[in-house]
Length: 291
Ligand SMILES: N[C@@H](CCC[C@H](N)C(=O)O)C(=O)O
Image 1 (cartoon, rainbow, N blue to C red):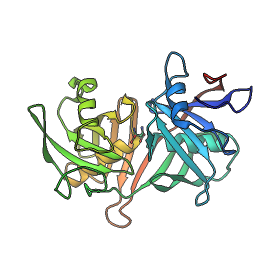
Image 2: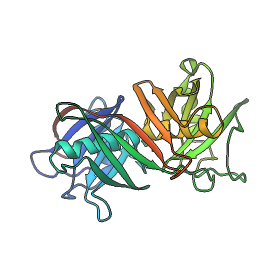
Image 3: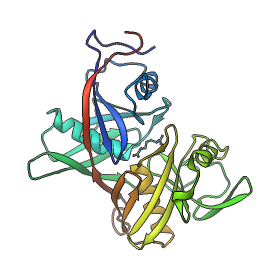
Image 4: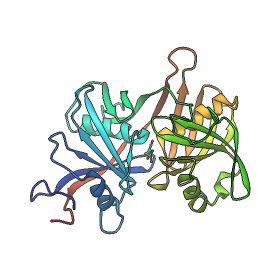
Protein backbone atom coordinates (compact mmCIF):
# COMPACT_ATOMS: atom_id res chain seq x y z
CA UNK A 1 0.00 0.00 0.00
CA UNK A 2 2.02 2.95 1.22
CA UNK A 3 5.65 3.15 0.29
CA UNK A 4 8.54 3.22 2.69
CA UNK A 5 11.35 5.67 2.00
CA UNK A 6 13.91 3.90 4.14
CA UNK A 7 14.12 1.79 7.28
CA UNK A 8 14.04 5.02 9.25
CA UNK A 9 10.36 5.56 8.49
CA UNK A 10 8.86 8.78 7.22
CA UNK A 11 9.89 11.91 9.17
CA UNK A 12 6.86 14.08 9.98
CA UNK A 13 5.84 17.10 12.03
CA UNK A 14 2.40 17.42 13.58
CA UNK A 15 1.12 21.01 13.40
CA UNK A 16 -2.16 22.77 13.92
CA UNK A 17 -3.80 26.04 12.97
CA UNK A 18 -6.69 26.66 15.37
CA UNK A 19 -6.92 22.95 16.08
CA UNK A 20 -7.21 22.05 12.37
CA UNK A 21 -4.41 19.50 12.61
CA UNK A 22 -2.37 18.02 9.80
CA UNK A 23 0.76 15.88 9.47
CA UNK A 24 3.47 17.76 7.56
CA UNK A 25 5.99 15.84 5.47
CA UNK A 26 9.03 17.22 3.68
CA UNK A 27 9.01 15.40 0.34
CA UNK A 28 11.13 17.84 -1.66
CA UNK A 29 13.03 14.76 -2.87
CA UNK A 30 9.72 13.41 -4.25
CA UNK A 31 10.25 9.94 -2.82
CA UNK A 32 6.70 9.33 -1.66
CA UNK A 33 3.92 7.84 -3.75
CA UNK A 34 0.36 6.77 -2.90
CA UNK A 35 -0.19 9.99 -0.94
CA UNK A 36 -3.94 9.36 -0.71
CA UNK A 37 -3.42 5.97 0.98
CA UNK A 38 -0.76 7.46 3.23
CA UNK A 39 -3.21 10.18 4.32
CA UNK A 40 -5.86 7.62 5.32
CA UNK A 41 -3.34 5.54 7.24
CA UNK A 42 -1.48 8.31 9.03
CA UNK A 43 -4.60 10.33 9.89
CA UNK A 44 -6.28 7.41 11.65
CA UNK A 45 -6.38 8.28 15.36
CA UNK A 46 -5.76 4.77 16.78
CA UNK A 47 -3.40 2.98 14.41
CA UNK A 48 -1.88 6.08 12.83
CA UNK A 49 -0.82 9.47 14.20
CA UNK A 50 -4.28 11.06 14.14
CA UNK A 51 -5.08 14.22 12.20
CA UNK A 52 -7.52 15.93 9.83
CA UNK A 53 -5.23 14.89 6.95
CA UNK A 54 -1.68 15.25 5.63
CA UNK A 55 0.20 18.06 3.91
CA UNK A 56 3.16 17.24 1.72
CA UNK A 57 5.88 19.72 0.76
CA UNK A 58 7.03 19.35 -2.83
CA UNK A 59 9.27 21.39 -5.16
CA UNK A 60 7.60 23.84 -7.56
CA UNK A 61 8.65 25.18 -10.94
CA UNK A 62 6.40 28.27 -10.67
CA UNK A 63 6.65 29.21 -6.97
CA UNK A 64 9.10 28.84 -4.07
CA UNK A 65 7.40 25.61 -2.91
CA UNK A 66 4.38 23.43 -3.65
CA UNK A 67 1.72 22.14 -1.25
CA UNK A 68 -0.25 18.92 -1.72
CA UNK A 69 -3.00 18.37 0.85
CA UNK A 70 -5.11 15.28 1.51
CA UNK A 71 -8.14 15.00 3.75
CA UNK A 72 -8.38 12.11 6.20
CA UNK A 73 -10.47 10.07 3.75
CA UNK A 74 -7.66 10.35 1.17
CA UNK A 75 -9.40 12.89 -1.09
CA UNK A 76 -7.17 15.72 -2.29
CA UNK A 77 -8.08 19.31 -1.40
CA UNK A 78 -7.14 22.05 -3.86
CA UNK A 79 -6.43 24.54 -1.10
CA UNK A 80 -6.14 24.62 2.69
CA UNK A 81 -6.07 27.92 4.59
CA UNK A 82 -4.92 26.64 7.97
CA UNK A 83 -2.56 24.24 6.25
CA UNK A 84 -0.76 26.84 4.15
CA UNK A 85 0.03 28.97 7.22
CA UNK A 86 1.48 25.95 9.03
CA UNK A 87 3.35 24.80 5.92
CA UNK A 88 5.01 28.22 5.67
CA UNK A 89 6.14 27.92 9.30
CA UNK A 90 7.31 24.32 8.65
CA UNK A 91 9.41 25.52 5.70
CA UNK A 92 10.96 28.35 7.74
CA UNK A 93 11.59 26.19 10.81
CA UNK A 94 13.28 23.50 8.67
CA UNK A 95 15.69 26.22 7.42
CA UNK A 96 14.51 25.75 3.85
CA UNK A 97 13.70 29.45 3.55
CA UNK A 98 14.83 32.55 5.46
CA UNK A 99 12.72 35.42 4.09
CA UNK A 100 9.50 36.82 5.55
CA UNK A 101 7.69 36.40 2.21
CA UNK A 102 7.28 33.22 0.20
CA UNK A 103 5.09 31.83 -2.55
CA UNK A 104 3.44 28.43 -2.39
CA UNK A 105 1.88 26.65 -5.35
CA UNK A 106 -1.42 24.89 -4.64
CA UNK A 107 -3.88 23.12 -6.93
CA UNK A 108 -5.82 26.40 -6.94
CA UNK A 109 -2.90 28.62 -7.94
CA UNK A 110 0.12 30.28 -6.35
CA UNK A 111 -0.51 31.93 -2.95
CA UNK A 112 1.59 34.68 -1.40
CA UNK A 113 2.39 34.17 2.26
CA UNK A 114 3.82 36.64 4.77
CA UNK A 115 5.20 35.09 7.96
CA UNK A 116 4.39 36.64 11.36
CA UNK A 117 7.13 36.54 14.03
CA UNK A 118 7.13 37.08 17.78
CA UNK A 119 9.79 39.16 19.56
CA UNK A 120 12.05 36.11 19.90
CA UNK A 121 12.08 35.65 16.13
CA UNK A 122 9.83 32.57 16.13
CA UNK A 123 7.13 32.18 13.48
CA UNK A 124 3.76 32.34 15.24
CA UNK A 125 1.46 32.62 12.24
CA UNK A 126 1.03 34.02 8.78
CA UNK A 127 -0.98 36.34 6.58
CA UNK A 128 -2.00 34.80 3.26
CA UNK A 129 -3.34 36.32 0.08
CA UNK A 130 -6.01 33.75 -0.67
CA UNK A 131 -6.87 35.23 -4.08
CA UNK A 132 -10.26 36.13 -5.45
CA UNK A 133 -13.39 34.21 -4.50
CA UNK A 134 -15.26 32.42 -7.27
CA UNK A 135 -19.03 32.88 -7.27
CA UNK A 136 -20.02 31.19 -10.56
CA UNK A 137 -21.87 27.97 -9.78
CA UNK A 138 -20.51 26.28 -12.90
CA UNK A 139 -16.96 26.77 -11.60
CA UNK A 140 -17.49 25.99 -7.89
CA UNK A 141 -19.02 23.49 -9.02
CA UNK A 142 -22.74 23.48 -8.18
CA UNK A 143 -25.04 21.64 -10.56
CA UNK A 144 -27.88 24.09 -11.21
CA UNK A 145 -29.19 26.44 -13.89
CA UNK A 146 -28.72 29.57 -11.71
CA UNK A 147 -25.43 31.44 -12.29
CA UNK A 148 -24.87 32.22 -8.58
CA UNK A 149 -26.37 31.29 -5.25
CA UNK A 150 -26.54 34.28 -2.89
CA UNK A 151 -28.98 33.55 -0.07
CA UNK A 152 -30.66 31.12 -2.44
CA UNK A 153 -33.35 28.75 -1.12
CA UNK A 154 -32.12 25.14 -0.87
CA UNK A 155 -34.43 22.47 0.48
CA UNK A 156 -33.04 19.44 2.27
CA UNK A 157 -35.43 16.97 3.90
CA UNK A 158 -38.31 19.44 4.39
CA UNK A 159 -36.11 22.29 5.68
CA UNK A 160 -35.30 25.24 3.43
CA UNK A 161 -31.94 26.92 4.00
CA UNK A 162 -30.75 30.19 2.44
CA UNK A 163 -27.39 29.24 0.96
CA UNK A 164 -24.50 31.16 -0.58
CA UNK A 165 -22.05 29.20 -2.75
CA UNK A 166 -18.42 30.36 -2.83
CA UNK A 167 -15.19 28.75 -4.03
CA UNK A 168 -11.94 29.78 -2.37
CA UNK A 169 -10.12 27.36 -4.64
CA UNK A 170 -12.23 24.65 -3.00
CA UNK A 171 -16.05 24.55 -2.81
CA UNK A 172 -18.03 26.01 0.10
CA UNK A 173 -21.70 26.40 0.95
CA UNK A 174 -22.37 29.11 3.54
CA UNK A 175 -25.57 29.11 5.61
CA UNK A 176 -26.34 31.92 8.04
CA UNK A 177 -28.12 30.35 10.96
CA UNK A 178 -28.95 31.32 14.55
CA UNK A 179 -27.65 29.28 17.50
CA UNK A 180 -25.09 27.27 15.57
CA UNK A 181 -23.90 25.52 18.75
CA UNK A 182 -27.22 23.64 18.81
CA UNK A 183 -26.88 22.21 15.29
CA UNK A 184 -26.44 18.46 14.87
CA UNK A 185 -23.60 18.87 12.40
CA UNK A 186 -22.54 15.17 12.25
CA UNK A 187 -26.04 14.38 10.95
CA UNK A 188 -26.51 17.45 8.77
CA UNK A 189 -22.99 17.85 7.34
CA UNK A 190 -22.80 14.62 5.29
CA UNK A 191 -26.20 15.34 3.72
CA UNK A 192 -24.86 18.58 2.22
CA UNK A 193 -21.42 17.09 1.49
CA UNK A 194 -22.80 14.26 -0.66
CA UNK A 195 -25.84 16.04 -2.16
CA UNK A 196 -26.26 15.47 -5.91
CA UNK A 197 -25.99 19.23 -6.58
CA UNK A 198 -22.31 19.11 -5.61
CA UNK A 199 -20.46 16.83 -8.04
CA UNK A 200 -17.15 17.33 -6.20
CA UNK A 201 -18.78 17.29 -2.74
CA UNK A 202 -18.78 20.45 -0.65
CA UNK A 203 -17.52 22.02 2.58
CA UNK A 204 -20.46 23.46 4.54
CA UNK A 205 -20.26 26.38 6.97
CA UNK A 206 -22.97 27.41 9.41
CA UNK A 207 -22.38 31.01 10.46
CA UNK A 208 -23.92 33.40 12.95
CA UNK A 209 -23.43 37.18 12.65
CA UNK A 210 -22.42 38.59 16.05
CA UNK A 211 -21.80 42.20 15.00
CA UNK A 212 -20.72 44.07 11.87
CA UNK A 213 -17.12 42.86 12.28
CA UNK A 214 -17.54 39.49 13.99
CA UNK A 215 -18.95 36.12 12.95
CA UNK A 216 -19.12 32.73 14.68
CA UNK A 217 -18.98 29.63 12.53
CA UNK A 218 -18.85 25.85 12.50
CA UNK A 219 -17.71 23.78 9.57
CA UNK A 220 -18.33 20.35 8.12
CA UNK A 221 -15.37 19.67 5.86
CA UNK A 222 -15.61 17.55 2.79
CA UNK A 223 -13.39 14.52 3.37
CA UNK A 224 -12.68 15.19 7.06
CA UNK A 225 -15.99 15.84 8.86
CA UNK A 226 -16.41 18.48 11.55
CA UNK A 227 -13.06 20.15 12.19
CA UNK A 228 -12.14 22.80 14.75
CA UNK A 229 -11.41 25.32 12.01
CA UNK A 230 -11.23 25.83 8.27
CA UNK A 231 -9.30 28.74 6.79
CA UNK A 232 -10.84 28.63 3.32
CA UNK A 233 -14.22 28.17 5.03
CA UNK A 234 -13.71 31.31 7.14
CA UNK A 235 -12.84 33.23 3.95
CA UNK A 236 -15.97 31.89 2.24
CA UNK A 237 -18.10 32.93 5.23
CA UNK A 238 -16.58 36.44 5.23
CA UNK A 239 -17.16 36.80 1.47
CA UNK A 240 -20.76 35.61 1.80
CA UNK A 241 -21.52 37.96 4.70
CA UNK A 242 -19.92 40.97 2.95
CA UNK A 243 -21.75 40.20 -0.31
CA UNK A 244 -25.04 39.94 1.53
CA UNK A 245 -24.37 43.22 3.38
CA UNK A 246 -24.18 41.59 6.83
CA UNK A 247 -20.67 42.78 7.82
CA UNK A 248 -17.80 45.16 7.05
CA UNK A 249 -14.90 44.17 4.77
CA UNK A 250 -12.69 43.10 7.69
CA UNK A 251 -14.16 40.54 10.06
CA UNK A 252 -13.01 38.35 12.92
CA UNK A 253 -14.27 34.85 12.30
CA UNK A 254 -14.52 32.77 15.49
CA UNK A 255 -14.25 29.03 14.95
CA UNK A 256 -14.32 26.22 17.53
CA UNK A 257 -10.49 26.29 17.66
CA UNK A 258 -9.96 30.07 17.73
CA UNK A 259 -10.18 33.14 15.51
CA UNK A 260 -9.02 34.29 12.10
CA UNK A 261 -9.01 37.82 10.72
CA UNK A 262 -10.36 37.95 7.18
CA UNK A 263 -10.27 41.00 4.91
CA UNK A 264 -11.82 41.17 1.45
CA UNK A 265 -10.31 43.98 -0.59
CA UNK A 266 -13.30 44.71 -2.81
CA UNK A 267 -12.03 48.15 -3.89
CA UNK A 268 -8.78 47.25 -5.69
CA UNK A 269 -7.48 43.70 -6.14
CA UNK A 270 -10.60 41.76 -5.21
CA UNK A 271 -8.35 39.46 -3.15
CA UNK A 272 -9.20 37.92 0.22
CA UNK A 273 -6.59 38.00 3.00
CA UNK A 274 -6.48 35.58 5.93
CA UNK A 275 -4.40 36.08 9.08
CA UNK A 276 -4.01 33.52 11.85
CA UNK A 277 -1.71 31.35 13.97
CA UNK A 278 0.42 28.30 13.14
CA UNK A 279 1.81 25.95 15.79
CA UNK A 280 4.12 22.93 15.88
CA UNK A 281 3.16 20.19 18.36
CA UNK A 282 5.57 17.30 17.80
CA UNK A 283 7.81 15.56 15.30
CA UNK A 284 8.71 11.93 14.76
CA UNK A 285 9.12 9.05 12.33
CA UNK A 286 6.14 7.13 11.00
CA UNK A 287 6.41 3.47 10.08
CA UNK A 288 3.79 2.63 7.41
CA UNK A 289 1.76 -0.58 7.36
CA UNK A 290 4.13 -2.15 4.85
CA UNK A 291 7.08 -1.78 7.25
N1 LIG B 1 -9.20 22.78 6.55
C1 LIG B 1 -8.86 23.38 5.33
C2 LIG B 1 -9.56 22.91 4.09
C3 LIG B 1 -9.16 21.48 3.75
C4 LIG B 1 -9.68 20.97 2.42
C5 LIG B 1 -11.17 20.76 2.37
N2 LIG B 1 -11.65 19.79 3.30
C6 LIG B 1 -11.54 20.37 0.93
O1 LIG B 1 -11.47 19.19 0.59
O2 LIG B 1 -11.90 21.26 0.16
C7 LIG B 1 -8.72 24.89 5.42
O3 LIG B 1 -8.25 25.34 6.48
O4 LIG B 1 -8.99 25.61 4.47
